[in-house]
Image 1 (cartoon, rainbow, N blue to C red):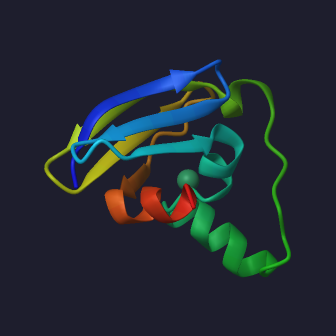
Image 2 (cartoon, rainbow, N blue to C red):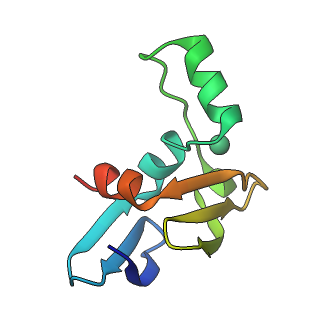
Length: 96
Ligand SMILES: [Zn+2]
């Protein structure tokens, strides 16, 4: 699947319309909590599964979204964190 349209809804959700017309809506807070980058992963590994980071303000505002080839998007947040690469399969899982 490939995204036809990606947008931020009400500054709260990431909305993706896929090329099969399926729509995924993912709350930004969930997206940030599940950032797959090495830094966030290490943080989670260190603190354990029950650790839920609390993000607020600029940390939950998306500043940029870039398409990476045919498999992923990268998301940059307004606090400057931009190392998260979200594979399409990961996005689909988060939207369930
Ligand atoms: Zn991260």
